[in-house]
Length: 243
Image (cartoon, rainbow, N blue to C red; front, side, top):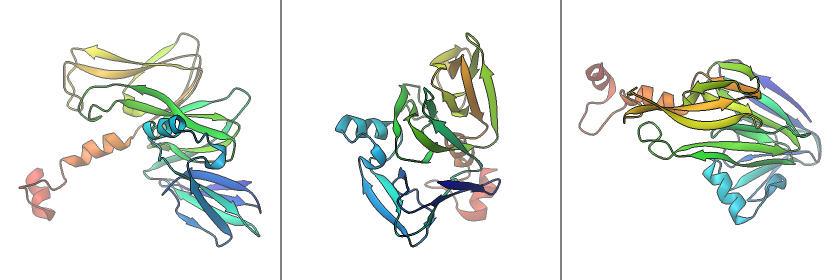
């Protein structure tokens, strides 16, 4: 199975499938396909565990309940997925003990044998997270997966016992060998969270981590001030009033 990543700021993933080859993704993630590609949607496609708890676990991790298979039928075909935000598309080879945790909007597609499930779910305070908590998706099993990381991506190799404290929105991807926790730094008030402290994720080695400079939650917070609100003006006038 061949693939290529096209573009820079808003990359596009092209998967070139030979007859009988298949990839799966969340429902609704498709961008465009060739005529030879057949689609099948269900809860246990791509070798995913289809039991009720497995499906609910994927949903809690931020994935859709239903997944879609894309299979080349009768000849070579192309399946394409586009990045949702400026950033990077990264391939991950899973197997031989390699598994990863990726941010809840990170999974793009994978080959059969890759297992997508909930990896981490921790409660956080109100504010930008809306009190819903911090969740990550786990990618395990065997095969090739593609993830989407937002903004600029910075990679660190943490030695055993080394710890970084990170704003949760910047945690993009890390090897499962890395320890994860959420702590509060008291005495720091932040407009994003409210309350008496700032929530930070702690990542402790050994293992490799990838941090992202942008997240959907940060972007939403940045533009919220400029969006029309009930009782406010709209268009250019509304934007001027918001400055």
